[in-house]
Length: 340
Image (cartoon, rainbow, N blue to C red):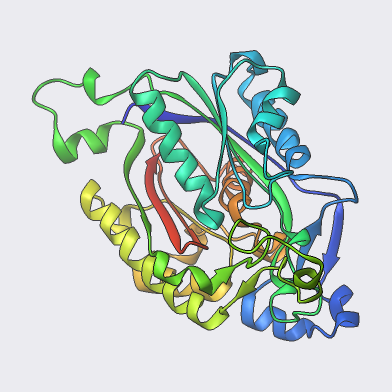
């Protein structure tokens, strides 16, 4: 409690790649739609790096907040496609923004923005930060093997941002008689969250080459070790389970029923995962934000881009219960219930 999202922002590259554009690679456009729901995705321009996308999203977010960059006192960038192994993309962004703030990257793949959101919330709750900027930014197109026709069509490039600040209405402001679930009903902010990992499934989503375990060599590059590999079926089964379990845990802790959820924003990986969750929860489909048909899977940028889409469309209103859930490589997940 005691924190709120003050503004959102996003940026996606101009270059649109449709399913039909991938036919030349042997990808079946009908199969892509039927199996994933994706119709197109964005591709970064040559020379356009993750920090460039992050900067554009951050500037958009700060403009929406009517805030100067120098007022930001914490920068967290969630990404698995950093500009360099070091320095961090967050430090590059800090320099571009021109603010004096601690900055660090978070590598939790598609759950990265959720990890960043919870981390920033705790910084603010303890008074260590007042205005935290959380960005999910990815250039996934550089990590996918064009010859992998089952994986290559799934991913896109983009960035999304959120500004987290202290909430004027916190639990501390309520009377002594107001506590527990009642407090959750009266205040905004982060009502409940859960973060988790199942490292035993790490090989299901992995870039095998380029780290200290297997430094890239000419031979490794020839074998495509620099590209993402994915056990699609295994990840799908795991994701359906973890979305269901973690969302139920959050709502149970907060004392909120699924019927009280106004908006659902899940990681935009696959429409079948989203449809399965909606069906299990009994939430009407018109309350679920879906934009993967236009952007594909943008990993850590997925949730903040969708969040900004919903915010721009006026779908998020003061007092709304918003359920967020990210899940992916690690295997890791992050789920949160927010009162807008």
